[in-house]
Length: 244
Image 1 (cartoon, rainbow, N blue to C red):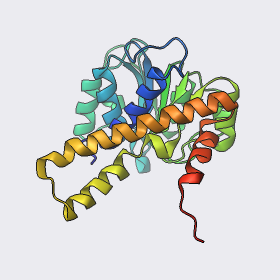
Image 2 (cartoon, rainbow, N blue to C red; image 1 turned 90 degrees about the vertical axis):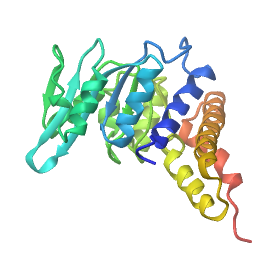
Image 3 (spheres, rainbow, N blue to C red; image 1 turned 90 degrees about the horizontal axis):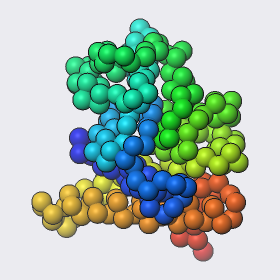
Image 4 (cartoon, one colour; image 1 turned 180 degrees about the horizontal axis):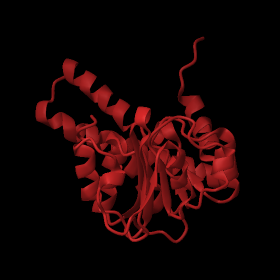
């Protein structure tokens, strides 16, 4: 799942749904959009690869490969980072700040990690930890869209604040559902083998589930003036089977 980037695939499908559904005013494609990614692990790195394929610019990335020695930090370049260099550093077990890109600005150590959320960008991607962004940090975010690739990276208060400012926030359990959806397909393969056809089926299922539901969530949130998380809960609750 991680090597194939299926969780990352679902995250990009969420962005595409937001754009194609007209939920990001004036944006018609990912091309030229600036993206900042917190956490350059399997999901964050996968999102970067898919996003640059669609013409986006990765302007900031962060990681902390060795917390015990405070090794890692944030790398930033307003004209776009060399994603190939970031991936090579990661493959060597090094931090993104060691990618060697000329002209890039570096912020070293764990204390600097939240700097990524203060940089002006179009899309900011929390892809590392739970509870990264509280209300105080949300006030410093300068982005149009927050793509929640990690599990519950924003507090409810942070999401409500961003919504009031007109910043669109995805819903974590929808954006990053690619991994668990792929697990369901793997389990189904045990009982009903499809062989080589399983992967394209999994890809189609992930993209279809995310895009359909994300468009519905963002549409309801806009119509009702509520956060996407609140809209998602309204949609989900009638679908959940309740005991008699």
